[in-house]
Amino acid sequence: MGVSVHAASEEASCPLSWRLFLPAAWDGPDAQARRRACRIPDDECHRPKWQLALDMLDELAGCGLRPAVLVADTGYGANADFRHGLDERGLAWVLQAKGEMTAHGQDAVPHQPEYGGLGPRPLPRYRTRPVSLREHVLAAGRGRGRAVTWPKGSKAAMSSHFVFLRVRLAGRRPKPAADGTIPLSWLIARWPEGEREPVQYWISNLP
Image (cartoon, rainbow, N blue to C red; front, top):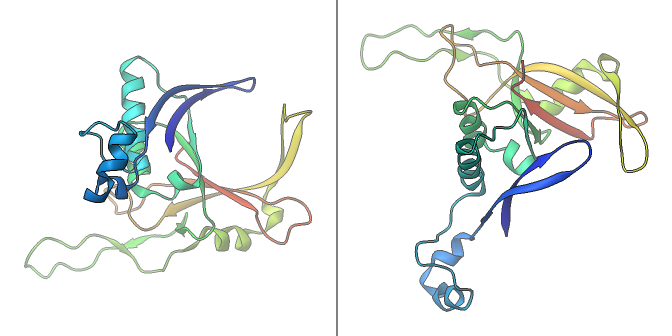
């Protein structure tokens, strides 16, 4: 398998860098014959795809190439370590997500538990449970969205209906702000006409 980073515009896409992804099974003693047959160097081992992607982004940044906005599919959008790595590098991103991912609403406010005097001070925590991205969009309703048309599809302009919401992603997350709040993210859902619920989801750290 290959992990790649591409430069893309409305007219074309061009690969800038590739990494070979080795499944974890290729590191085991039973894989030595297979490694030799494939001429895999001894110092090459299994590394998660998200780490390979960040390595390539660092390499490209060293050449002066930083994306205006980075986009990636669900395998990366669902990975908190990858999202945190992008945030640490100051990169803007729009990542495809699964509707089962959870988030707090925009107006959710954390509660600061009292300090008992022993050990580290407790971190602020939310009293309400996060709900899935799907639930957030269904609660807002399709009428909350807007039609968006973009210039080029494979043959002509394309259009669909999108709902845009501000949420605070739950689970593993970046360091909270001083008031304990989780940074706001965009939740974007494509909800075409005639569909009972959204068919695709994205999350983004754009302002």
